[in-house]
Structure formats: C-alpha cells, structure tokens
Length: 117
Image (cartoon, rainbow, N blue to C red; front, top):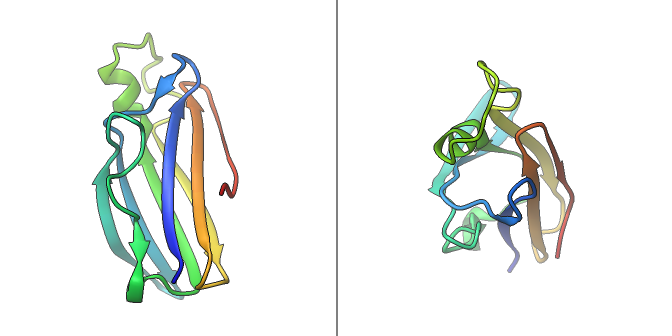
C-alpha cells in the first residue's frame, strides 16, 4: 500500500521547520474535505504518514502549511502583512501503491516543492 509524507526545511535558518501547522484536504468537484490536521515535529516531519491504508486513494489533494505563524514565532523581521502566510500545494495521487513525499523548502520570501522519495 502507498502512503503520503511531508518534510519542511527552513532554508533561511538552515534547520527543520519544526512546529508548522498543516492541513491536508481531499479535493472533489465543489468540495474539499479535511482529512488531517497536524503539526511538524522537531525534524520538520509529521510523526506518522499523512495518509496511508484505506485513506490513501487516487485523487487530487491540497496541503496547506501555515508558515507565516512559524516565522513570526521565530521572531523573524517580517513585513506586516507577511509576504508568505499559508502555502497551498495542490497535487495528485495517481498510483495507490507508491510512496508520495511532498517536501517544502521555505524562507520568509520564497519556497520550493517537488515530489520526493
């Protein structure tokens, strides 16, 4: 069975993105069902996969990461309002037997993501 994970790295400070609140939603026409709400651990990961087992199905998903609160908590000198607040990553799962990993490399002014392994 496949599963979904994430990992957040704070590229501005050279450390894991610890304590970032996130929400995973499954997207369907006219609907976006919340599946998971978590907070990243000290390593910038979640303690368990975001999706696995029967919940891990093909479809479109949205991962929302609240990085504005994270950088504010670190007492970063941010504009008001901050340039980045919530990062929304929309992606698809096509193969239910594979590991999908969605890393986020983030600073207060930019980010990058990709399908990791």
